Amino acid sequence: MDAREYLNRKGVGLDRDPDKPNTLEEKAWERARGSGQQRPKSGTPHDWEDWERFHDDLAEGADTLEQKIDKEAHRKALAREKAASEQANAAVEHFTPPPMVEKATASAQPAPAVHSRVTPDEPAALEWAYRALAVLLPPLALGLTDGGARRVIISVLLTLAGWIPGIIYALVWLSKR
Image (tube, rainbow, N blue to C red; front, side, top):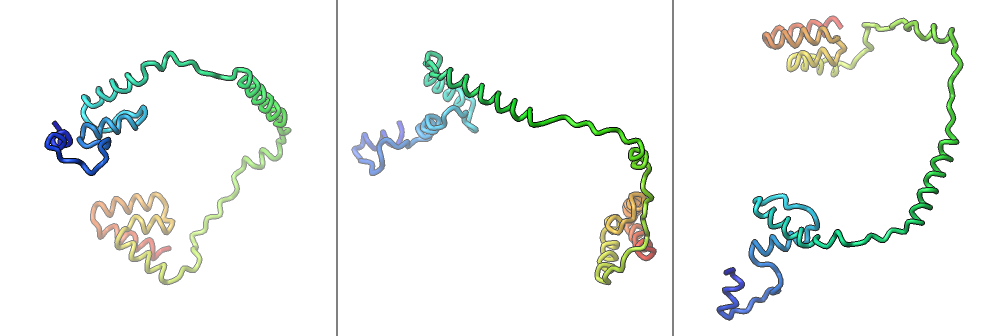
């Protein structure tokens, strides 16, 4: 017996809507009715079995329903779609450029690498920021100042071995740069 039944037996009227679910079970079934075909996301497997049984009862006659499809309209739509795709494919043509040996050999030679070690004048605040970063995170300071992968790895190893060697290595690199 739930609270609603108890109150009704005692003759106490309810101010609420009598059809509104009151108990947890009633609320669960109300959610199941309104959920469509989605299974409950929480609850016990027993709840899921009840839910599946409820929805199986609802969908029992679904196999006997006939779908009313306008087959002629479907054929016309397929024909229009096929014609549109053929028209789109006709607009696209295939182009193969003629082989040019001179340009191919010229582009195969790598351009001379112009990598200067000279950095443009940096503001003093940026240099101090790099030094502070060299004290806090030496590998990051080397990485941000284009120290190269080898120097960054060495800095990581020195920092892991002891913080001070990593700091010294990063500060030496920053002073050379």
